[in-house]
Length: 70
Image: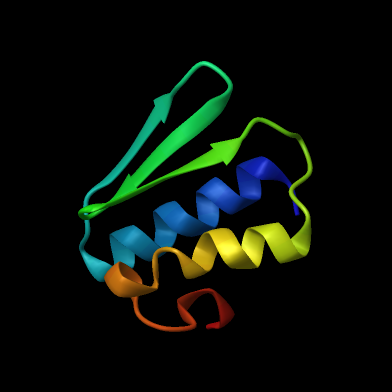
């Protein structure tokens, strides 16, 4: 999955859930905040599907369990 698609999907889900969404460029990673949950995503063009799923799963508290499958 492309890195831009991962960020876009997360942004759309945050907007749908009415949560704040913020992207911060760090030194080697991109910091992404949804609501009160903050995590980082590496700066690779392609994100492995397993890695993307685990990254999405970190936001389950804010967006609901399995939100990325909908």
